[in-house]
Image 1 (cartoon, rainbow, N blue to C red):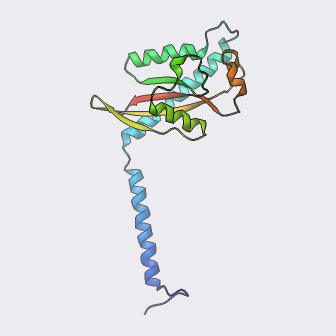
Image 2 (cartoon, one colour):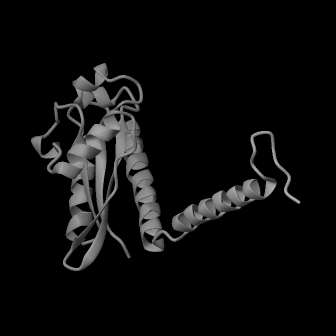
Image 3 (cartoon, rainbow, N blue to C red):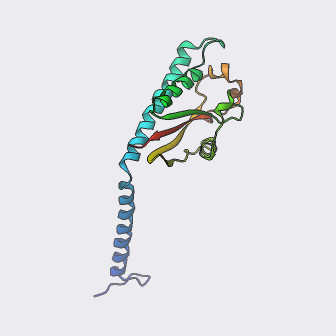
Amino acid sequence: MRVKTKRGWSVAALVAVVIGVGAWAATIGQEKKAEDPAVTRTRKQVQVLDDIYKSAIVLITENYVQENSDLAAGAAFQKLFDVMRKKGYHDVRLLDATGEPYEKKNLPRDDYEKAAIAALKAGKPAPEQIVEKDGKRFLRTATPIPVVMKKCIMCHPAYEKAPAGQAIGALSYTIAIE
């Protein structure tokens, strides 16, 4: 016995559509679950590094930067980033998003960094990129740096004009996927 709905669809047809949509949705869920676990671990590693670096910069600025002549936390971390790179752990760069960099070396260098800055300035997450070098895969990603305290303006007067929460810079990471 076929039971028809008001629009002429049979209950069997509706059940078939629902089952088909359910199977399609399950396939999408499987695609998400099938993501490379090494990439997921690397993203978490970036989160940890990002939290450590940004928390330490804020703590150093709050507690040790009192005058313009004091070593800026950003300058200290540039040196730390160089050590991490030289030891082969990962590459992290401080990027300017204002167009008025503290140092020219902080300008985005390549298409990826330019796209990351554009996305972050628009309030979107930076795109990720997986690249291969010498047979090894690397994750490239970037995280925003907003002005989080008035002391930042001591070294960066241009930041005074930045709207609250807007990215004035970024940390750009290139980290091995293991």
